[in-house]
Image (cartoon, rainbow, N blue to C red; front, top):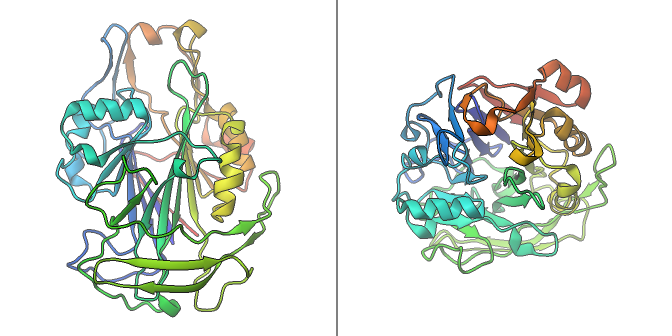
Length: 397
């Protein structure tokens, strides 16, 4: 399986495309390849980013994005908006999305979700405020279920968790965790079963009635869970994969039932032992203790460590405390996360040299870090990338 990271603008707009190991020919029944799942992050294309008034903050791109309109990109399963600030929640760009799309759901930080609803451009049932993650609240993780690739296969799952910083007056600092476990074929075969009734976006489950779109079919049971004695301070994880007792797949109405037990550390030969891809997106940065519980509970139980990709700023931006204090944590704030989660790749985010003006940036001090400096600090085990506009990076597991 693979994760394709495409940098859409020079700042922090990315298209993340998760794909299973198996490749299938195009089908007239699907808008995207079977098992694939895509997430468009913080879209901002053309036009300025204006916060309150131009005298406070006006930002403009210095490098044009790789597309002029979101309609030029494949329709994503999820549009992820990490905060309500206009360089992340850009109304003119969001209005380029198809408001009647049956495929796309918008998941947004609560203030951003309120702002997007106020646009009255989208079906309100497709806009979902992200709940704050708690390891004591299973329903604080948004889950998307992906149907099996063939009858008898296992379903896949995408999870999204929102981890906001505490007492963050600026509202800038949070982390969003994404995991992807691909669906499988039966007995490891690659022949795909075409079913016009089944689609990759058929299931959204946040375990809250107010979030579930009304036209979605019943939610299948929880995904297979992996047990682990992995510690986030260890150098390598030790996991015991879950094994299925039984599963049945019906293509008549995408109904799916799976019974799972975790009684064996070795899956049967007919169950592909594919690990879970994982992403932490935190453009402004958070402290590692804030995400420690998420890592030690959800990422470990999902067999999602080491971390596949870490999207975080390289450069550190600091304002006086009375103008919000730290803006971007940069390398000093991200290195502990990358080391502790053994990130395979650190991709620079939110480091564009934008044209900024206004009172809020007069006293901002920026310390820029090069790829070489990041690589030296994080260690040779982590790939460090600074993607240009339109560049793709493919990470494989």
